[in-house]
Image (cartoon, rainbow, N blue to C red; front, side, top):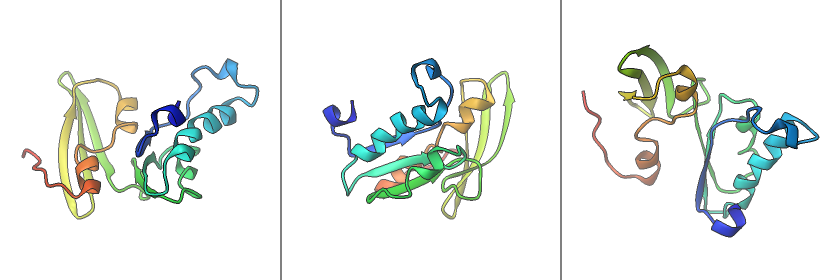
Length: 134
């Protein structure tokens, strides 16, 4: 699919168990299939990778382009610092470089936070300016 679309950048959030029955190698086979996106990116491409996922965190190792890691661990920039959930959504505090901010995901569930880069991830790496509401 990535060879047909020829993307310049891609986002890989996680390697889960969806469709695991279609992969003889189990989760490792799913990881290889998801890595195909990164492998198809051009040398000047950007791969946004969730460093909190043990498989995805390895995808940038041999990638000749730029790998940007997001997630909850110290390897992430942008990094999710905390999250609280209430009836209005998931409220996330993050750090991107020297900047900190907050945002609310209207989709409930902590799993959503794990797979969502901060709202300024794209603009930060494209060197655009944005403002984060207080």
